[in-house]
Image (cartoon, rainbow, N blue to C red; front, side):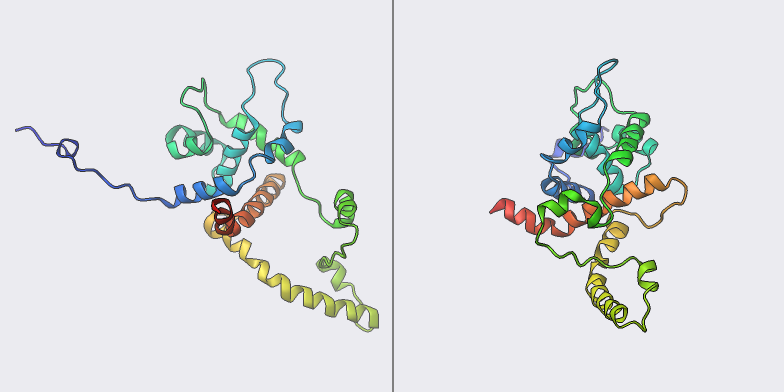
Amino acid sequence: MNQISLATTGFKLETKRKRKRELLDEMNLVIPWSQLPGLIAPHAPAGNSGRPPFATEMMLRIHLLQQFFGHSDPAMEEALHDIPLYREFAELDAGIPRLLDERTILRFRHMLEQNDSGCRGVEKCQEIQDKHTGVGWEIALMPGKRKALDKTNASHALTDRIEKIKFSIRVNVGHPFRVIKCHFGHRKTRYWGLAKTTSQLLVKFALSNLWMMRKRMIQGLAA
């Protein structure tokens, strides 16, 4: 007796919208793809010899997949082979002659670690100062500088009170930490490879800002 397959009966399995697909679809809408590759391109290899390099946006998409789901370089290579959803997000065409290997992913990550980071302190960012000349930057003191304040000095005591007010506001900024822990899986960090860890955290916090604002941004795009 031949077994009747579900396909021949007209029965169709309804595919549930998975959390991974929903996350990637939403982030794909809010990440500024038209701008980010242009910031990275000047630091990317020229590819004057040997095999042509992969597109910068494709490499960036794969790097962000690592940040979303916590994949190492070797695991990312395997996932690109095994998970169609990842290839779809990375815009890897079915006719592409080759997929990326872990060394290519590693080299791109190292390039970002060496060139694509934020400034620590507005006083170190002349471009920001020139663009916002009338802004008074109320940036919190580093813990060491605040600890060094002499509370018996009236000026230092006032500074300390201001810092406490800043802290009461900044405490609400703790939400991005929950996002990178619970949604992007960064519950543990490492002390070996600090450059890699720093780069990952910078990217994850930038993505967390987009993730928290994604609903409003998507509504704005649809309007």
